[in-house]
Each structure stands twice: as C-alpha cells, then as structure tokens.
Amino acid sequence: MKFKTKKASFSSEKQVCFLQPLLQKKAMMLREIIIHLILIGLIFIMFFMATAGRVSKNEVRQQVIEKQIALMIDAAEPGTTISMRKIGDNGFINDISAEAGSIHVVINDFISIKGYPYFTKSSVSVRDDVTKFYIDVR
Image 1 (cartoon, one colour):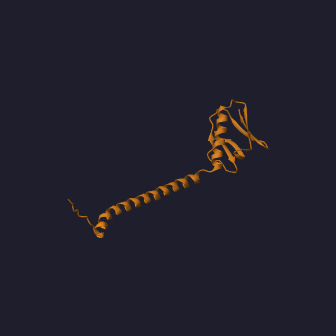
Image 2 (cartoon, rainbow, N blue to C red):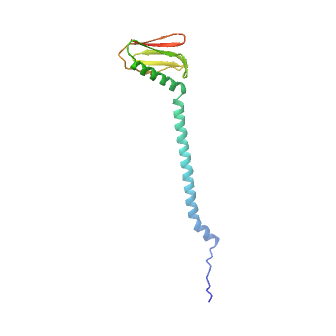
C-alpha cells in the first residue's frame, strides 16, 4: 500500500505575506533598541560633561587641605602651633587664612571661595615663613 501525500506548495507571494509581519516586528524591535542605546549614550555624555566641568584637581586638593586643617584646629588645645609646608604632595600652597570661623587655602593660585569652618572657641591666627605656614591656636 502506497499512500500518496500532497505537498503543500506556497507561492512566493504567500511566503512573503506570511513572513512580512514577523520581519516588521523584528525591525521595530531593532529600531527601539537602537533608539534606547542612543538615548543612554546621550545621558551618559551629559552626565560626564556636567561632572567634568565642576570637579578639578585643584578644587579637590584645596577642599581636602582646608578640611584637614580645620579638623586639626578643632582637635588642638590652646597654645598649639600647627606647621604646614608650602610645597607638598598636593601642590604649592600660596596662602592660608583664618577668617570668620573658617579656614581658606589658596593652592596653585586657585582661590578659595567658601573655605571650611572650624568650631574651636580659641582664637586662630596664621603666619607664614619662607617654607612653612604656622597656624597658632590660642
């Protein structure tokens, strides 16, 4: 016994019509992925440019030195003298000043605007030498 089977034959038009919605769906997904990648890239670039403009090496160094000096002043007992070298690992310190309860440091000619506050009740004065600054807590 032989069975005869009919082979289903599709014309090329029917095959295209059958695959067309599938191809359109894949194309839409690909477009969405590309748009998402472009948007993520733009957001990353905007974030990078915003932070790169705000943070400079001198500003960070200046803030670190101001904070360290303020913490040393707060921990110092009256009659203590703190000495700081003008040339160090953080660059060249041009000036140190103590005004209105905050310490200001000028490093590599980068001027301090806010300073860093200290909370000691003692008076603080700064004097400089050729190679060092001396911070007197009295």
